[in-house]
Amino acid sequence: MFSPGLTAQVEAVLEDSAGEPGDIVLGTLGYTGWRYLEAPLVVEGGPPRYPLILKELSIGRPTPAPAGPGQAQPQPAYPYTGTVALSDLGVSPSGSAEPEVLASFTDASGNSGWYATRSEGGLSLGVLKAGAGIMRAGRPTTLVTPDAKEGEMTIRPVPVGMPLPVLASTATLDSLGIPLGATFPLTIGSTFVPVTVVGTAGHFPTLYPEAHQDFLIVDRDALLTRLSFGGEAQAWPNEIWATASPQGDQADLRLLQHAQGVSLIQDRRSLLATAQADPLGLELEANLLVGFAAALVLAVAAFGLHFLVATAGRQSEYAILDANGLAPWTVQRSLELEQAVLLVCSVVIGAGLGLVMSWLVIATLHLDTSVSQTVPPTVITVEPRLVVGALLAVIGLAIGAGQLASRVGRRQQLMEQLRMLG
Picture 1 (cartoon, rainbow, N blue to C red):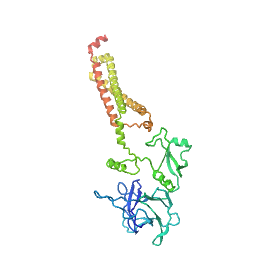
Picture 2 (picture 1 turned 90 degrees about the horizontal axis):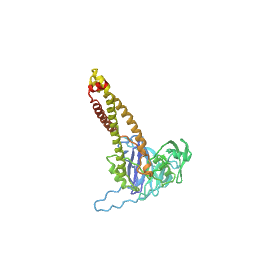
Picture 3 (picture 1 turned 90 degrees about the vertical axis):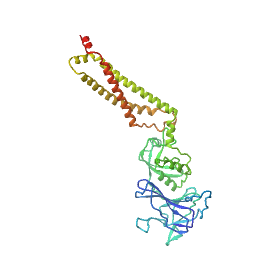
Picture 4 (picture 1 turned 30 degrees about the horizontal axis):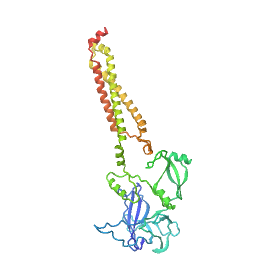
């Protein structure tokens, strides 16, 4: 790369086969003449998984060196803008001293396969074309004029003309009258991007929900590259949903807070803590808990009452069995077997009905009718430990109530029952 001496640096944005991104600083342009800029290939999380995809090269302002305590930031030694030349893009395999050329910027026919965007505003400069302004080894080179002070100049591969695959909501397909699998032009600003509907989706998370969502889901980088190449520079995501590792989430949060163009950051944990501390939500949770406790008490009481009445009504049969010499523990065992069968059936059927009713009823409970409360629909999650704990509590209390009822119901004496039988 030829440089007249600029205060700028060259970066390469990569992506490996596992989707891990990599942002590599190839070097600065603070020199004059030709120089081969290179850096080791790394991505987030460690060594890359091949093959790699080069998404773009960028020429922008370098990271300033930290100033000493009480000292002002030093002035740059070189200007921010100037004409640089690109010759070849290559890689150096392990153990090889000579780089292997992957792409060349010496094509003067206008079919180089690369295009650039202006530093100021990001407008497309069109397909790059080599010229004889600066020669290298007797070959023409591609000239670009970045202005690192105004912004980044990007150099990207020209996007292919194939339609982009998209997911669409059913409401979108119905309103447009487009069947699944159809291809149609997506117009954003003054740029037309062909897309093909490959599937449908019922909901897409967004900070601006709608009762009947009308949306298309398309690969962000591919769409922005098409728009950039088509001259639509004023297109960027207005929402970014990011997942951070628990070890580095605070550092990521601080980095986003100081990022240029970020106007609002919402942390899911803080939003969840606020929702859990909401008085209306706590009241609703308390009502559900009281309802469950009341249902538990009534179920256990009904179970015990059933066996109290059943045992009292069978006193004459038990008296005859006792008179014929049947051991009392045998009668008690028959009662315990009956209780076990009834308890298992009741728990299985009751748990199933409870889960179904929770799935149908809880999803309709909202603190208000605003769109932010009703969209997206409430997601029901089952906590296995809580369910198992509730079932064990029901089973334990029911067993205790059944045992107490069977013993209380059999307190009458044998002779009294025999006299009553005549």
